[in-house]
Amino acid sequence: MTGSQTAEPMFSHLSFDCVLPLLLLLTRSLEGVYVADVGQDAHLPCTYSPATPENLVPVCWGKGPCPMFECHSLVLSTDGRHMKYRTSSRYLLKRNVHKGDVTLTIEKVTLADSGIYCCRVQFPGLMNDQKTNLELVIQPVAETQTLETLYGKNQTEISTLADELQGMDVTTRTGLYIGVGVSAGLAFILISSALIFKWYSDSKDNLQNSSLVTLANLPPPGLSNTVAEGMNSEDNVYIIEENAYEMEDPYEYEFCYVTNGQQS
Image 1: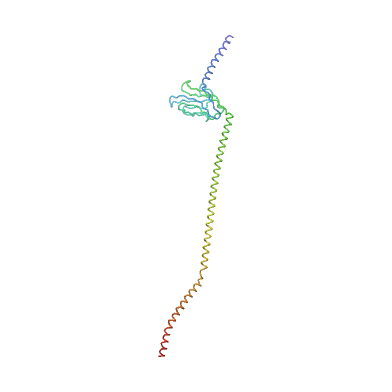
Image 2: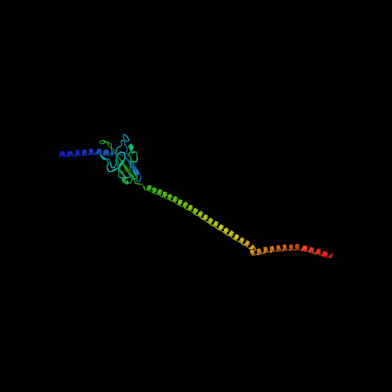
């Protein structure tokens, strides 16, 4: 009885002595708390100093406190130079990995991303790993922020719609101006064509009328020939009469001479 009664306090004392260091170790390993809003990107810092750029060390990120080995609930791991595994495309290493900056970026966080994350830099050797525990706290978006976001989004959409309508108005007016200009041009061409056709028709009618007047004033071909022949006949008559006079004069002189002879 005495031995059993003595054993129980010793066991409880040993259990408390074992649990207390573990709790202190877990408390000390929590390096920081980082807060992000839903929908934003969260950044959990973790760095180490490689001896040379060529001597890079494998790194793993897990969700939950760092266990004794590896990473619990692995979300991302590297082979030192390149990413080897990740559970989602939202988990990224955007910093300078070749200089030992293995900060974890979680894009567009949700409430489910809240919790403790472990960064484990796996240096060679037993129990040489660098372990960092970081807590991520995700805050829901406040109602006022949501209203402001919606208001800003609505304002942006209204501005975009106004710009589109203005652009459509400008396009419509431009098209209207072009249509009016084309219509005016076609009307001018039609009017000009009509005037040219009318002028051509009037000129043609005037030319025909002038030709008809000229033809009306010309004498008939037979009449012209008759008049010409009459004029030629009159000329011949005049010539014959003159010749007749010339022929009568000698006889008249001779007759006078004979008469004068007989009288003498």
